[in-house]
Length: 179
Image (cartoon, rainbow, N blue to C red):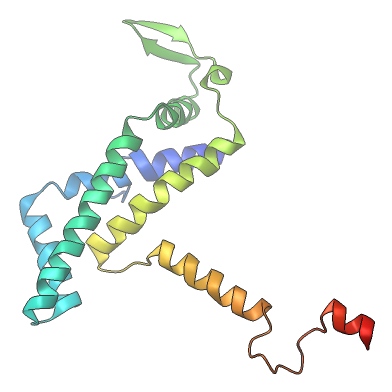
């Protein structure tokens, strides 16, 4: 659990120049020149010279950017991420103290209340941010909701015995009793 918590804290919060953490990428997107370069590249890649598609691509870019910012804003202020950061900092420094209200106190890691379930929940909150940033920065991504629905439909078709005259389709129970 320790390494998972530390890794999540690193990929979300590290502010260092060579670390592509969510915090760092969001921060870099606040630079007007960087944002304009990415916007222009995104529109050119998705729409080419078609003016109608360019407007649609502009909207798509801005929507992904806003989603990433909103989701990050909520996550960054969350108690859960704060607990992950505190745990990570404690592990890195090998210090059992935390600075609170102007003085140092013993850190009770158990009081952070981290459970295995919290790792999965945190990853669920991180996923949409990473996907939106991937679209904005790399002009690439997967619409996970559409992809999950497509896979659900494919599984439904597969398990329904499609095509209808499939010789390998299992015999229905009623047919098996009568035959």
